[in-house]
Image (cartoon, rainbow, N blue to C red):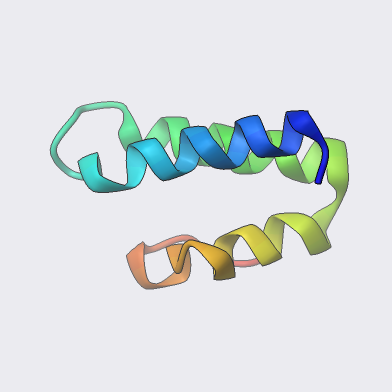
Length: 62
């Protein structure tokens, strides 16, 4: 896994506990998923959604 992808995933992991608690956690996760999609493609973005079970928290695969 590339360092950049790891950085994106680490930031997502840091924000998950704060969804609906901190005001921008949802936005940060969405932006990071968009960056993963743009840099690595939809398959990797979808795998990230599955890996962190973000689909159960409201995110949809593309």
